[in-house]
Length: 235
Image 1 (cartoon, rainbow, N blue to C red):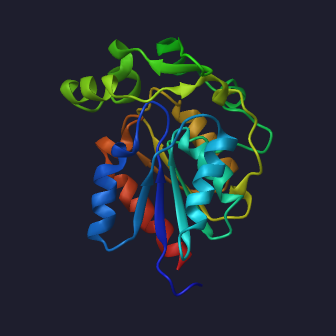
Image 2 (image 1 turned 60 degrees about the horizontal axis):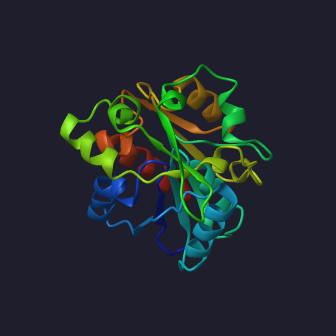
């Protein structure tokens, strides 16, 4: 094992930004753990993964990648392109097999409330992007947060390229790296059955918590506990 301390790199998903990790970042810093919360561009697994991998390769020492939601696609892609990644943590996140797409995977499980809440936007010079309807954001994304907090998150959300949901994944880095999965049992965006199915398939260490999709905001303690477990495996 490397003598250098492992850095935790946090990758947010769709309809969020790096600030969604703020309490988790504070908790890691209090523990003396080096941490970086990256700005995910939400353009597609290959391009987002390449960008995160470039950032990871700049870090001197081992890296634990943590992804929330669509961020799971990104950390899987990034880990196959950066040799200093030593583990993966999926937080209510997509853990795809090579050649699999998000929408394909979801078709094998019960529907969530996500699809009906998506709104397409055609932006100049860009592909179609998707956001969550403001009036549905709380119920779908963060039902266990106060209404006022949800209203702020809803109007500050970052949309994702619609094509990202149909893009086929690259090599599945979880096949060769220690992996961990946090299931949010009250998630209305990614059905808990889908989360459990992915966690079982990748052979992850699994924790379950009664929380919404926004578990890093509503239950940062559970996220920190799983990261602590993953860090111990890398030492």
